Image (cartoon, rainbow, N blue to C red; front, side):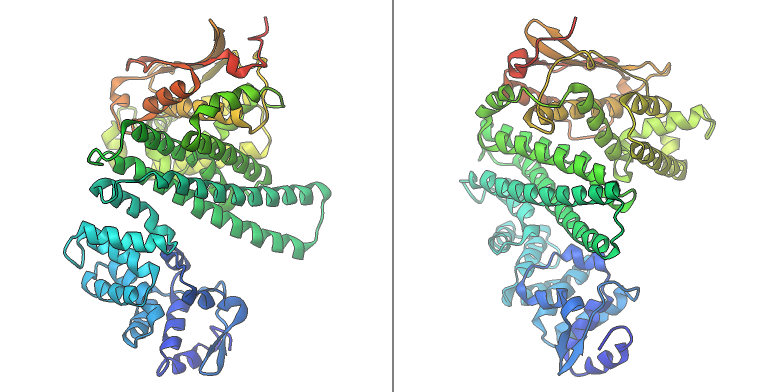
Length: 544
């Protein structure tokens, strides 16, 4: 039997078969809703592979199409309700989750309990959320903790972050040293997925260079690549969300975490934010341009960041030694700057980051007479949302098109000057520092440049359009990265991030024997980070 042609026959089966009712619900349920449930119990497995193998329902074989246009959330709810009421245990959690999403907490709680009683990890996690929030049952943090812990022990990723949160906020466990090992497991898994994505990018480059036209091969590789990409996105987002929760929750930790551990948590959480830029590049590339080189670059950048994350979280003392050893290769400052700019802009130009650069959209609109010159920030927010959205789409597409042309750094800077500000780069081209491309040194420099330049974009403000100066120089045994950014107090007072960037840079400086003093907030804002020249041992300073 093939859906939807034989939908009527399946509906007839559903009159007496709870499983048929569930299959109908699964057919109608929107794909994104199904994916958000993150089902892992093996009892769901056969419904996930039904598109390929078919299902046997009362001796009838049912094939569920992998892609179709018949999704209907209301129908899905109706049939899940029927299946759950018929006692079909696989339907308990999905129906409970839909009830919870619709604020039908009483019914959601009832079927979450049934799912838990049927030993589904998904049900345990949902019950944890219900008791944590007090929605559908009386708030009970201890019970929430127990249910999250059980779901976590069953390998349910969705429970990881709230489980850690319940530990830190309520202090239910004295020994939390195990979590760094768990994060290392996540990092290792992410590395493997990124390697696979990298390999598929290489295959696509090979296809382009050799003008191959094997359609079946291309479609097969496209499917594999997209599946790997989905896993990369899920795994990295999970890593980011988990580290965010660790960072935020540790602030309320009732003195259970000593100062050194707290610093480690904040440092790791900041690394998680650095994953956002290359991840946004992968997301944009997957849904728009499909540039193989960008896949490879983003994957390798993330791999390098994960390497440093591993060192910081498990063996911070070895970071200086590894930096010193990485002194040969094709990597150089100009290329790192170009690649970092690419990742930063693909992140900041995304819809999710538009508020961070809102002042640039407003200034551009005024300069190009797209709105009155006296429009205030408040008016822009209230009355010009559609114009900002239009500019965001145009800039994102324009920059992606530029990248497709393999631009020089100067072409990137020219594009930047037309929309944001003029970026004056000094001393980068004359530096003799060498290192392995995407190695430990490049990753370290990428982190520094990312933190410094993202803040320049977020807090830049200059009526006379003064340039931002980014320089590299040698001074008294240090390689000094400096950024001079025009700003005003009104722009700096806006909350556009965690506010922990300078704390993060201070921690990196301590771990590497570098120099960093938290700069004073003023209109001519200057930030300097000095790396001991001995760590970049192949450097003889700048060419004279």
